[in-house]
Image 1 (cartoon, one colour):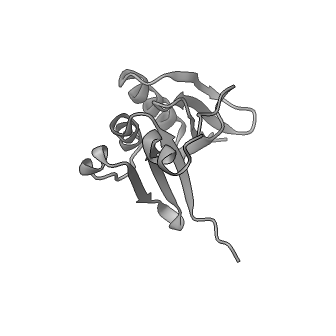
Image 2: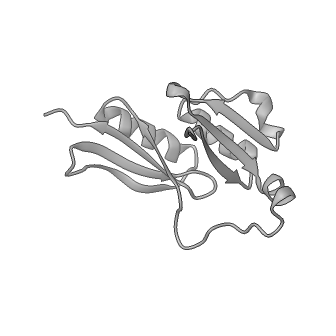
Length: 130
């Protein structure tokens, strides 16, 4: 039986992408910035991987980036509503695109969306206190 194990992102600038995800608390070694493929273990046994465009095209020469909006979204639990606001502010201050500023969503979470250096949506959330 197959077991879900890895989420992979194709990136145009490995160092910029890894720097973004380090700001979100992922433990990515500094020497990974120059690698064509990087994987990190996530809590719960999953892995997140990054591949450069050149790496993907080395085995799939016809690969082209998706168009028409994001095709993947990653979500990070920021612990509490203030954590959503602080993380959003930190990422925007570091030069990343804030797509949707923090708001109190009707489903009971503080929510915001930023884009990583390749335009992937990264959701920031935390449960609202009732």
